[in-house]
Length: 239
Image (cartoon, rainbow, N blue to C red):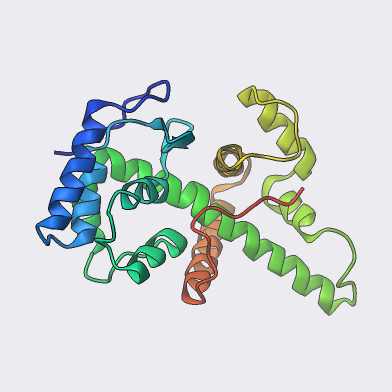
């Protein structure tokens, strides 16, 4: 049965243990591992937890489901029951086997988690790819004009996408979220910042540009996946 996330203070819930037990039992009974994994995700309850000294935060800003982080947590319990190549393809490149159709993926996750997954997909993964795409545009434009080494391409790409300097946007984000003032983000803060930038872009751009940028990000994402160059929403910021 699909279960929505339940906000908590970091402690796992009984439903999480049931999800882990279901996952292991399904794998041991030779159920296809993608189905077992998605069924376990559907049962998972905690939006975050501390496990073996590490904090896992599966729901960004209460809206975006980092399904690959939960996949990492679940796969660690698989005891070699998932082929290494398939596991790496999932965790590093966000790929499930082709036999898992988009319809099956949506059905197995359930409505609430699938909606939150879409927030993560567009708000973090596509947003990162869009940043890379615009950086490439800046690089090509400068190279064509003979200014290949003039300035920071990521800084100009931020100006184009978000109508503001990187440093000012970061400072605004940190203040709004109550984070300490820093130029070195943790993984969780970086995910937060990327999703914050996505929502900022939606608010400050006209609809045709939003649509055009989304297409650009999707095209870059697919291209990176084809070259196995995407880190599934774990790209590090440049400040």
